[in-house]
Amino acid sequence: MKVSTLSAAVSCIASVAAFPQYLETRDTWEPQEWIAPGPNDSRGPCPGLNTLANHGYLPRDGKGITLDILKKGMLEGFNIEEGDAILLFTQAIRTAPDYPLADSFDLANLGRHGILEHDISLSRSDAYFADPNPFNETVWAETESYFTTPMITVDQLAAARMGRLATSKATNPEHELSALADGFSWGECAAFFEIMADGTTGTVDKKFIEYWFKNERMPTEIGWQRRKTTMKGSERLEYSLKLIIAGGQVDDQSFNRLLLH
Image (cartoon, rainbow, N blue to C red; front, side, top):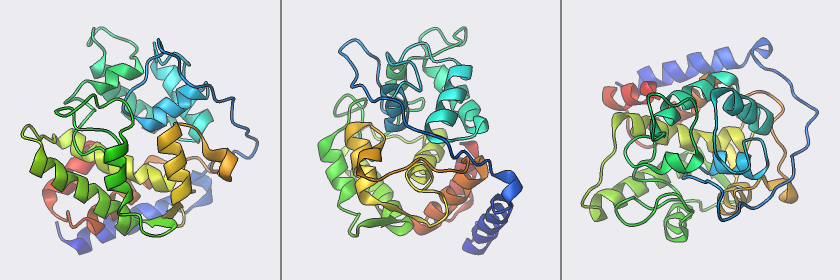
């Protein structure tokens, strides 16, 4: 797929997201108390979901997360529309040990390699080297080396993602990245500009991202506020496409992989 085609898709999505009637204003909000997880609590490789559990928007023990719990937690915690929660749940439930009979999952289940958890994480180790669930300082240092200004840009984040891909290919003899994982990895990057920003500027404050990833805590103490407009799936797709273009992945295969997410 040519850049012009991808750009047209981005423009179309952006124009839809720009109309006020597609946005829900949620002005009244204060974060729930943050409590560090205990030794028996379940946590996984997703800093966003871990954060929601640490603040009590998901069960604090990280266990028994149903679709209704996930929808409510993502909406109340990060102001993300229910459609994205449904999409995430359809894949997350596959990590439950008793799938396809399961109706809930635990956060630690998400660390099962090759389903949602994938190589080239921005903050977790490839499963070949170490447990991919906890935050990894070495991996994060590589990612952060691409963030050379106080405000992270689309180009910087795309370069970091492609850098992690190159490192994994060069060092991990069991490197793999399924079509589903490839699409999710771009969507995870898009969350920088949506969850920690407001989806309008194409930049995000580096200190918010660093605080969030290292502490798995909403960075309200350093000035962050939850966005006032509900994040739509079209917005995630828009930023994912921008990142793909910036990363030089402008072919039909990459675009189709993104649509799987």
